[in-house]
Length: 380
Ligand code: ACO
Image (cartoon, rainbow, N blue to C red; front, side):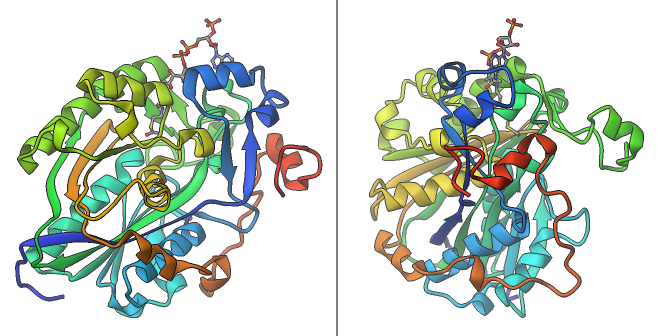
């Protein structure tokens, strides 16, 4: 790693990956007491992707990461640092980032995970920015990746309708060209620490028979409290990021918010008096993929032609902690560069020696999804 401070930190690569298995609201109607109408009207979610039996956070992160590296026109060994934001690492140790490094064939990067729940990618972006701006790294791969289906209680209708699996990634690079990252804001509010939490599996309550019997290995959430705090925090974090960038809301071309719930996104736009036409939304197809949500949405926004050179973007997220982060940036990459990642898929990432195959990857309620044919709406 070098140590020459640079003036510009640019997003040069982007990529995403979502598993092919799709769980629809119709599927969920067969599992819990809910309805498509209730889910769509309260959340905007119609379907979500679920990791296959051999997919994990590391495997999905590696595919998204390889795609971002290719889009940036780089090779895996050009990356100096790999950061993976996740609340569902493959193991408590080693880090998922270390597994990603091995899977993409990088021989020289430092690699570590970052725990900020749904703000994981935005916090990772901010961390990568600091490394690049200080001259400690030239190219940093930032990934948000989650396998939330493995800690979702598919008998709890209050949470199981919300979450999905996937990964998204970006490469941040040093450049003295104008544009790039303009303003970053990050906050953490521990008074909301237990609004969304996963009680067991850590040092406070290691997973054991008692914690499993109590369902403490599943995510718990106070939905209404989270909702209110999310709208408030997203708005103030966004405004502070814009102030640091020295621009106003009217200067923005596109806002890419954390895709938790359409009503939260609409609440944010309303509180800022910002038009929904300039807000990118794909929660309907993915649900809440936590740290993967912002980079997944970013990749889709670029692919949909919603981002062009010179555009000013705001990426804004909130998550357990409660964490919140916002990045204001001027887009300088050629959107067509995504074509360089064409053809990159799961077959291009390698499994580390010693890697444990996922055990019981589908909870009992999802067993029939594995069969595929059991559900007319599920893609096996
Ligand atoms: N289907 C049908 N009915 C349901 C369902 C369901 N899936 N889930 C809850 N209900 C019922 C409740 O039991 C309740 O019934 P009752 O009135 O008889 O008691 C009723 O619907 C209303 O429940 P509320 O919780 O008040 O519903 P609300 O409108 O608040 O919507 C929701 C719930 C969608 C969870 C909302 O609160 C929300 O989106 N909160 C934010 C969640 C979020 O974004 N979490 C992610 C945080 S990011 C991270 O770090 C992971």
